[in-house]
Amino acid sequence: MIFNYLNDDTICAIASPHGMGAVSLLRISGSGSLEIIQKIFKPKRSKLDIMDAESHKQFFGTIHDNEYEIDEVLVSIFRAPHSYTGETSAEISCHGSPYIQQKLIELLISTGCRMAEPGEFTMRAFANGRFDLAQAEAVADLIASQSKAAHQIAMKQMRGGFSTKIKNLRQQLIDFSSLIELELDFAEEDVEFADRKAFFVLINDLKTEITLLIDSFKAGNVIKNGIPVAIIGKPNVGKSTLLNAILNEEKAIVSEIPGTTRDAIEDTIIIGGYSFRFIDTAGLRDSDDTIENMGIGRTYQKMEQASIILYVCDLTTMNKDTTDEILNEFRSHIDDENKLFILVVNKADLMEEIPSHFAEFVELETVFVSAKRKENIHLLADSLLNAVKSLNLNTDTIVSNTRHYQALKEALSSIESVEKGFQSGLPTDLASIDIRQALYHLGTITGQITNDEVLGNIFGKFCIGK
Picture (cartoon, one colour):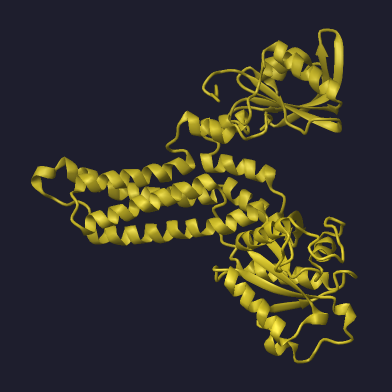
């Protein structure tokens, strides 16, 4: 997809969700915005001249197609450069009838607008210096955010927190690189302008900062897409009933027949501002059923993918041996030491009291529930929120974008090559190549270095009106 952001077209689009609603919003941006509004808008204040209207003001009136009155509207004016796109812009708030929306779009196009391409408003904001590329991508994340945590990450990135850190890292490398390049100009005189000891300190600092950002991607990806929680256990211990109790709906089929759940069932719920993606899995047991065994295989896959595992067991059948069996089963299938486990002891309503010796042989955090009666589900929610804290999801700067993650890994690799080059006595002109590569990869994150293909791929995923 090719953007026409360098031309002088005036673009328009519906910025509110499609369909019928109380109010709809249409956006216009470009140098011809006010002239187009003036042609179709009749303000109630008859002496008002739209061409002289103040920026950031709203005006009430009607939209006309010649003598045909389409709707009563509010028109908002934004003069360049103080608008979302950095261009002179206008917004029309009309009634939410699909007919009215369509008529207004047709009228705007016939009067001189063209339909905006996906993401073109934000693309123009980027082209006009209103956002850097990382901030522009955060706009899409903000629109897609479905939890408080995802919203907070997107807001921080849109306000430039992540961009500032990347630009600072890049500037430090540029400062040193300029001295290296100066040495190349005086190569025949064998002089050193760049302090090598200071350089190794800088390299170490850069590696530390970039590694922290790379390591934060796991947390950022979890927040963005929902914290994956696998519900596992033996057949008939109440895994599906527990999922239904957590979601407060009959999502999974519940049956006394072992092996009812043969494939992973997923759904998402917000708890304490975090999005949790719960995965109900097939019961773990030896089976001669080919399809059930396929489901059990997927259970182990989901265990690997999950950040938190809820191992559900039946209190009425638990003893020292079965508990040890559960713990050994964990260890045989999970290599990740950071995997968080919560033991969910179900059917607690069938016991008069919890055995006093239970805590002596259970090594995991344990929550007693009755999934059938939906008892103590709030305690399980508390345990999940406590588990989130141990995932270090509250880091100030978190990487949640795969493109940024890949660019940081490439930058780190180049910086490590620079370090090895200087340690091994590599000529300055060859070492400078790796420095330029590191600068390139850091620059692609904020858009200081980019190309049309990358921009088209990024902004093409935006909605039309943004």
